Image (tube, rainbow, N blue to C red):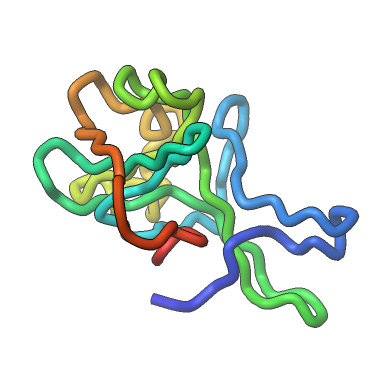
Length: 141
């Protein structure tokens, strides 16, 4: 485990920090990484939602890392896929979910991106509205 900044180097992108990268049509032959998670959050208008795996297990979000450059630290971006049926009621995309049994296949590159970076099937997630507590300012890793 290493600590990294979420988002690519804004110095090379007119000050915008890109935190996500679409999976479609792309290959990730190197710099693959994983972010452990027990849930992810969505904000839709003024409502917040918590998304967890239906079986309660933790999972990983697939990502790619970028080396430190000049004064910008080691960074990563989360790879996204089309939203699965539960999430698609709220938004079009979400982070690519890597289950615990898929970890080595992703990191060792023993499976193609098309075979692992896909929307999970229906009934994978439980979605709950968050009605109290502090807002999540950023992805917690």
